[in-house]
Each structure stands twice: as C-alpha cells, then as structure tokens.
Length: 257
Ligand code: PEP
Image (cartoon, rainbow, N blue to C red):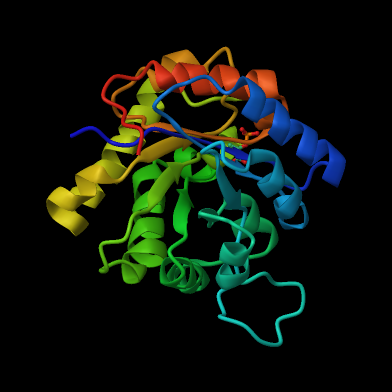
C-alpha cells in the first residue's frame, strides 16, 4: 500500500513573528511540486503569522503540543479547539522534549491525543528510546510501551494519525540513527500497527526524526520503511528544509493526499 509521505518542520521555541513569517514565506515560494505533505509547526504565538504566510499553498499548519483538557482554568495551555480555530490541521504530541522537560507521561498523552482526535487534528505522535535504553538493549520495549500506553487507548475511531520514531539520543545532537537502526525500530512500529489495527495500520505513515539534514535525508528517505521526516534544527533554514522535502519527493509510492 502507498502511504502519504510527510515532512514536518518543528521550529520549537525559536524565532520572532517576523522571522517566522519570513521563513514560512520562503518555504512557500520555493516549495517543489512533490507528492509530499509538508507541515510547519511554529511556536503557538506565531501560528497566525505563519497561517497568513502559507494561506492557499497546501502547506499544513501544525502545532507543537495541545492541552489534555477541553477548556477552562489551565493557565498557559492551548487547547485543540483553539488550534483548529487558528487554522491548524495537525499537532505534535509526545515529543521527547516535552516528555523530559514537562514530565509528560503516557497517561497524559492519551488525553492529549483524545482532544486532538476529537477536533480532527492529525496527531504526529512521537516515540523513541533514550541512549541508556538503547545501550541496555531495551529499545523495542521502550517504544512498544509508548505505543501501548500512550497511543493505543486513544485509538478505535479510524481517524488518521502519524507516528514519528525519534531516538532521543539523535534529537538536536547531530548524531543520526543509521539506516538499519531506524529501519529496525520502524519495523517494530509497523508490526505493532498491524497487530493493533490490522490492515488499517498499513495506511499510517511512520516518520523518522533526529538530526535529519540535507546530507542524510536522501539515504534515510530512500528506505521503504521510512515514510518521511520530522525535522527540528534543519527546518529553521528554508534551503535545508526544502532539500529534505525534495528528497522525500523522490520516494516511490507516495501520494499527494
Ligand atoms: C525534533 O525535535 O523533532 C527533531 C527531530 O530535532 P532535530 O532534527 O534538530 O534533531
């Protein structure tokens, strides 16, 4: 089955309103015509500026997180409904930086995913092992636990979602997983999807994230197991990001929507 190919840029906590707007405009102006779903995930305070810059381009607006609650007295939080109101179509959930710094656990992520699904946001759910887990031979167990406990309870409605395998030791470090390392864990995720969702699991894209750049994207994205990339640092340069989009566009079997 051909799965949608995604390249999502996670801008994290970087930029100003005007730099966010400029970057989005540069991506828009030079976006190659490729059958790739391209998403930009700016800081939430820059969503409106980016929405304006990409209007009508087909680029998806994404958020980096959403609240686990629907609304109410949760100072500083942004709800899934508010993200939709801003024009978002997708949201990153369970990024390892939030698991680590904000102490987000799987039980909380189930609730965030439920809010995202309820508002028809496509969640980009992140899983990945720490260096200690890898060294202890516990990679598969760590990823499977994040799928079993953080994702599985939120499923059952047939709505689309995306999984991003992001080894924690590869995020923002310049150390990228080797293609066999990435393929091995993508295989774990794919088998989990088949077991949990049967044939429907085959339609779920599994992206790789962790120090993807213009030099390593071609090799990673050529793998039939890797359906695209979640890109952090390299998404802050339109040239780097678009080179990754071009590499994704070379994949066989991708589809436009
Ligand atoms: C990320 O934060 O999701 C990520 C993959 O970051 P980087 O590309 O900088 O490693």
